[in-house]
Image (cartoon, rainbow, N blue to C red; front, side, top):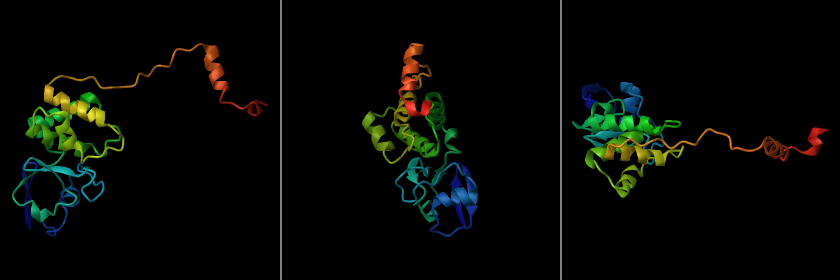
Length: 184
């Protein structure tokens, strides 16, 4: 039996010593916010905190955790920094598909807890192990900067308005895509 400190609670689990922490969290304890991405610690989707440091849970054997505190995405909002990061993610509208975002938030929170006003280079280093297939990196950086500066940043959005063109120009553009043979 292994006893873990997860999100401030003591949890006893009967699992093999070499079982990755990710599977203990997801399959044994039922905390499914931490995601499986690659299984080789390259994508960051499985990031959790171990005594405040961002670690990849997909390759961390549960026996290596020992008495260290594990914080998952379900518990990160209990800290002041974690709560600010989660709010910034909402304010900036970072999430698209959302799959990587628990890992992104965990890495950003660890960075900001250790370095409250990170430089762009420090952000790059801390976040470099987190892959976002949707490419929300600009918004992730904006959210981190919002937490660091305390200044709200408006989300970057693409305006949802049609370009102003005359009806004749719009018809001409439409007809340029239609073959004459298709109109007969």
